[in-house]
Length: 466
Image 1 (cartoon, rainbow, N blue to C red):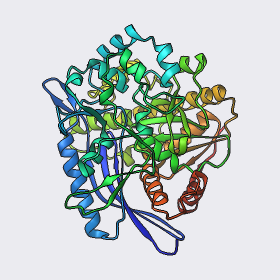
Image 2 (image 1 turned 45 degrees about the vertical axis):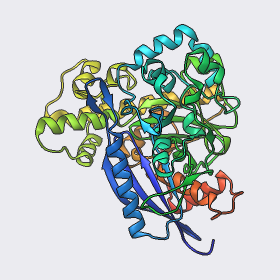
Image 3 (image 1 turned 60 degrees about the vertical axis):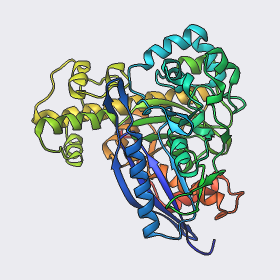
């Protein structure tokens, strides 16, 4: 590894997307953001969708800019949020992909559970109940019968780059149709639910080459990474002990442990813990907690009401000085799931009124403390279910910049919180590509990759206060 190598990482979240240049070499692990763009649900006549064509144009323009700045880029990797998909026939989309927060998924839940009870689904797929899991979306999708294949969002974009239709395994594990024990499609389950097996594409693993770009981007390999953004993020969590837990915090807070085998006990099902695929066959045993979505939607509503953007750093600084809230709310309350007037819904759960401008810092403190309490509860349950005494919590992603949230999580969990790296998802994407290119040697372990992260991005420590 005598010279610095470069790759391009496409990292798409539920509210924004980025294209990054990753540079890796002896003593070097660095990211350069070359494009950032907004992303989010768009209303259509039949519900909430993703504007996949606009997203594709942003990705393509970002990659072109990355190659302009760094012509030596050797490969491209794509990660995104999970569960959502596009249906293709003759290589073309039948319709815009639905957004996972669209209300149609409730109908799918009823249809699936009428055929296969949830306890059986859990034994087979190992997934916590989320009403927007792909299997429920399929059940509610009238166009599924017309499709030749279905591609999750990162696979859909990889298809546009390479022409090859595949399913990367970590993201496929979030569909509810991947056997949690074998890591293969559960075709018997799909047939029982009336889902055409043909729509389930061939599976690939992180590090596999999907294909080669065949457009203005030149002939570069597109390498499968942990295409579920959390799978990529966990690659870059510098786990500091065998009993370390993680929180990958952005729109969602994914709270859990890395295991060698799934836990599909009745207790895990009752606690609504999921077993998702990780890089190198690891299991991400975690619980979805509503994360910074609550704060970002609240700030968005206030900005619209004010007719000017609310400055989030200033708001959080003021919130840190506000008294500890007398009441918290359930951050996972179903009433908070959809886009809309978040302050009013949170105020209803707190039993009060929406605050005026002078009361916003205290309201923001209540939001952050409620998220932290949900994190702490999930950490306690994860330790109990896996029979582990959690001694440290690594908090990565955008939430690592929120010192108030990090300290509140340390206080409420009673555990040291090590915050960072912020760009864990992009780093994990880059590291898997670099390993596939032979930068570290193909036998480099996840622990080897994580050691490089810890060296390049020392975390910030938050000790629990009494």
